[in-house]
Amino acid sequence: MPAELTESEVTVLGLIAERPRHGFDLEKVIDERGMRQWTQIGFSSIYYLLGKLEKRGLIEEVAVEAGGPGRPRRVYAITVAGRAAAAERTAQLLAEPSATTAPVLVGMANWPLIPPAESVAALRRRSDALVRKKAEVLAARDAQQPLPVFVDAVFEYSVVMLDAELSWVARTLTSLERKR
Image 1 (cartoon, rainbow, N blue to C red):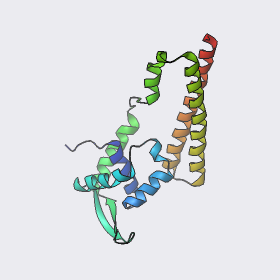
Image 2: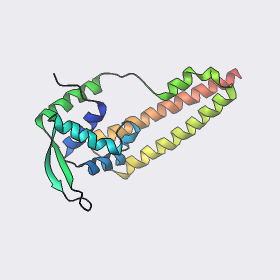
Image 3: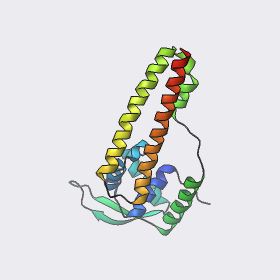
Image 4: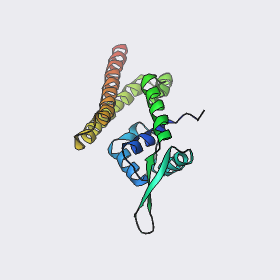
């Protein structure tokens, strides 16, 4: 049984399944779609992931394009095995809720360590940051219209999650301010 795909691996496979891509193209689409907000794929890890996926037979080199001086760009396409593995993992990721590992939960668990006024100030800063982040997500989405439904759904999920967190922060601030 092959090893389960990581979220980073299935993300790269999904992008290559859309159309053959080279590393720089992957970097560009990850940036344009705001995927850095929810993936752990750094620029340098893209090439590591491509090598790993190629070694596992999930992608294959299909062309070499001219890049910068002396830097050819290897273009990869997804293999039949890669498509099957990515489809299986995608269905699993869509169906199964995952644990929340947001750093804010660590802050909440340690809340008693700081004075109440500092908690309120920190949450107000968080609210301001969430408002800015939401504006960035909406601007990125709007700048790329029209988008395929699945890409638009990713942006919409991000906006809904930001709205939910903004609502939580507002309720928490109200509760804290009542207790002061």
